[in-house]
Length: 487
Image (cartoon, helix red, strand yellow):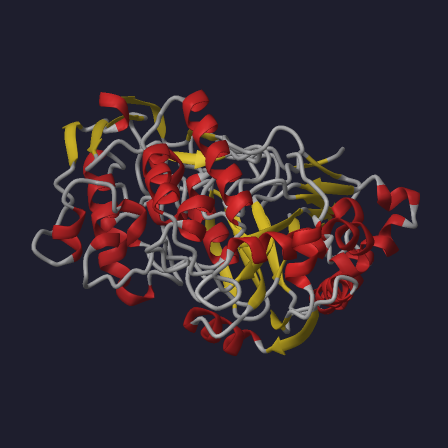
């Protein structure tokens, strides 16, 4: 049995409602999908044998492994997939993640209650399913790796009703056998899963809210994987050579940024935003506070994804006219009260800007108020971050920069970015797609709706006898299929 540190009690393991990182991770352990995300962020088959696209990314055909069955004995076939994906979209389900399937033909008619099943899902045979999209989409396979696209057993849903999230039974790599609130969740290998891991007895997620308590239990050997290793304790563990080599770097798909209120003066002027970005000197702050745990963000798209910057973009020092723009500028910078490092980051920015005649008032706000006020646009500038839902560059460009996106907190609007983002979403050729995303990145650096700060990496600490652990780039990126105990 291998113990992994969890935090708080998950509200549900139902893929329709598992919207947080930890919930989604556990839901993916219990529920298999046609596709999954591997630890490196690549999309690979899971319960599908293969998949292919046609008509320039408008159709996706999946071949499902034959002979798959749920614990109930029901077949996991094309019919089960249609029912599972359509369930997420039905208004009576009330799922907040139905957008995962918005590209499929007929999505609007299901979400409105007019139809029960997605008409764009065509059953060719029991093991062959075709998804017809409204328009070409290169993001579709990546979306199908998300928890929402995991396949549930209609019989299990019917039998358990509203309690299904507490008692899920599906065809995932692991089966839930015990759940004690605020204590632990216990999983055993699922004998029905084709690639199950029989090398260990099971996984136990111990729910430990406080970092200090988690580290203490790790030190006594009661916790075997500390994921993530709390940043405040990283230096402590690295002091010991034995433990230093047990720390696994875990590059993450995220973007940390300082956003400007492009709807407010003087931040509606891109020249002001660019001058501030240069004066900020975010690199000195990153090196001081994070060191190797964060890498510079050269653009909006993290490394490993198509369209990320392959080299450091050229930048020029502040010109005399830009220095003049900054003189006497006064504004507020907001940040959430979540950890001490955020305050240090903002104090560093405040000091750097003061060197150029810019006076900044820092506003530290509790998380709830910060989120609400940011959505209302009540800010000059704010510290933000974005973590990928699925491994695709569109998941950074469309939410953060497209004009009508609910997650576009800077209120940035540019028709060229909107058009290019839509075009890039439909390009299935990686080279063409990457080139267009780099064009978008260059335009965003010129317009500067935000300062791209860094990509924060996590670290994972494991006991010396734990083998086969693969740090994932996304929360749904590992099923622990190679995890084992050294003999």
